[in-house]
Amino acid sequence: MSKAIESCLILKDDVEVIIVDDGSKDETACIGDEYATQYPETIKCVHQENGGHGQAVNTGLKNATGLYFKVLDSDDWFDQSALVKVLETIKQLHEKDEDVDMLIANYVYEKPSENKSSVIKYTNALPQNRTFRWYDVKHFYPQQNLLMHSVIYRTQLLRNCNLQLPKHTFYVDNLFVYQPLPYVVTLYYLNVDLYRYYIGREDQSVNEKVMISRIDQQIKVNKLMIDCCDVMQLKSRKLRSYMVKYLSMITTVSSALLVKSGTEEHLQKRDELWLYLKHKNPDLYRAVKHTVLGSVMEMDSTIGKKLITTGYSISRKLFGFN
Image (cartoon, rainbow, N blue to C red; front, side, top):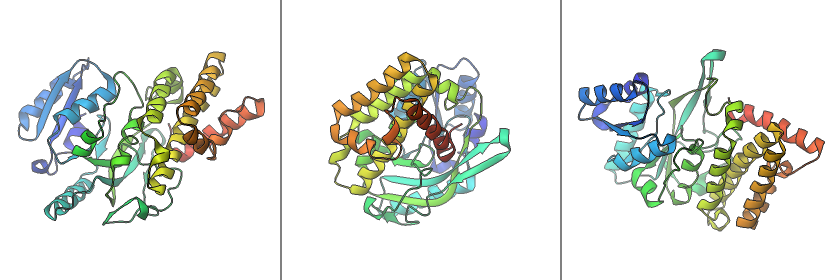
């Protein structure tokens, strides 16, 4: 946690750090209050009853007064040289009255258990160092999703889209990077490795066994993504295509985990999820089904289930799952 906080303070006059103590039973509250006392002009520590990751993000947004909003989890950190470039770019755009809706930077998977790291860049898909729109976007590779690690939103945009993440629910980061997208008109990409994402703990939320144990929360977020907007009515073809692909990936993850668990109850939940999508938005259902990932997810044969689990294993490597 201290490493995360310290990584934000390279230009402390230009940032507002909001530490959310989400009813933690450890030293979070004490550490947060100490930093708030040490840097009263920069850091505030907000204490609340436990509400989970989503509620912590909601609280951060509620208390934010800055022009832009970025989430940093307590076991991750920012590269300080990259953060300086990001802040300088934001200031330059603001001085020219050219504030963008979303700024994107690279992120790095840090895997100490394997003594390696891997960088997710967007150089082939996004124009660099200039404001652009969705029609300027090129092809995203499978691993190049816009994740919480890579996006920085204009704060008011998040409020305009009425973003409210559910309490006591994991995997809300998928909703965070999905629901606001139809409100994003202008974008800017910086080819700097800003976010360092620590991955590999046995109890981490993206660990496969942990995900299966929390599958109802994964399904809940999946359904909220389906509900949040009518993707098929979006005017931008490229935005529509990206959102269909992302929803397909999340629904694939949900389906594959339910199949891998092997219980009759979970197989029924897999079927119910696809029926939910089909009844809620038939056009979106057909679009998701037509993707490579979505085409096999409702198969019930032995071969079909094998394809699902194999596809999931491949996706883990492509998308960087734990």
